[in-house]
Length: 214
Image (cartoon, rainbow, N blue to C red; front, top):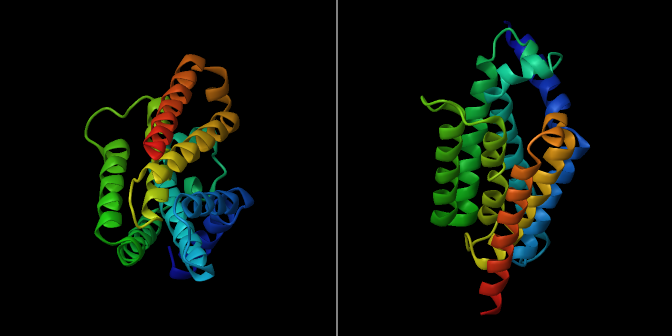
């Protein structure tokens, strides 16, 4: 694959999977919840958090698409990444984005943010690439969605305070509901498991509120 063809594929992927209104809404939602969890110091702080949220969402969306390529070949055969003859360039971009995100999180959130970033990376390596049998699809999706509460914690300087835990749980609930709505298989099956997730998140929200009032 020539360099120009690789660049064209990357741009096509970006238009298809990143430059979409849903992703923009997700970035703004994550940034807004983070700013609600910890009040920003001014407009520049809001801009920094929103930019970092965009970087994190794009990085981990690319990783999810790469890890999910076998599944997407059956369900979304027309996607750019699925049709790509070689995915090495996408992995290089992922590594570059992950490195940039690491530096940005370190500058913004310090050691606490770096620790959360490392934990998130280890969790997703476990889910995506572990040598053990991959979790069932429902469980896998719920584990992957844990990245959003971690994003919100990283976008504060306090890590998992009671407020960031509360708004992280709200983010997790919202993206889970959207995921169920967007996935026909999830809408049809696993009602009990879905209710279990909702109840678990509700418990987290309750105890976060209790901690904040205590």
